[in-house]
Length: 157
Image (cartoon, rainbow, N blue to C red; front, side):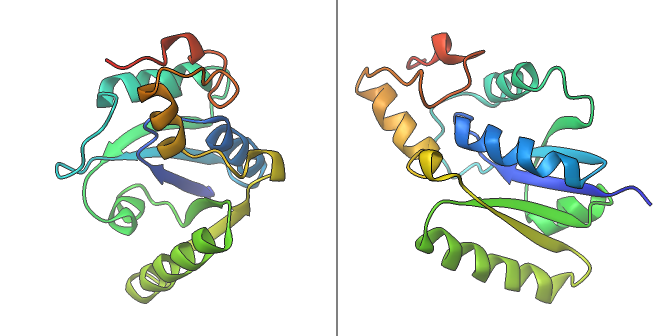
């Protein structure tokens, strides 16, 4: 049976932290779906199409990584895609507490879906999409925090 994992997030924008977590998770699975959650209540800095394009470009040489979008619960998307694993990266104790709660709730709904938590490398633990967006809004240089393939495009649209 194929081991399929989902790596969910908004990826607004994708960061070097996301890339590191995904590349470290990749050897564990046959296929990883980068799943961009769509939330009509949330205000994004970059349009969905741009985020999809960036992720596809960053992972263009990784045939076992695909990019899809979804609405609703991540576990429902996992069921739809026959994925038995959810990948989550954590940077801090606060991230751990939040992700543990979500993993327990997901497990209560679908015990067959396992959450795999991967610790951020220390040098990447301060990087988040939220911080990167603030640097972009402040017209700062985010080249150290986003994949080099897309760094030149990090401006406010």
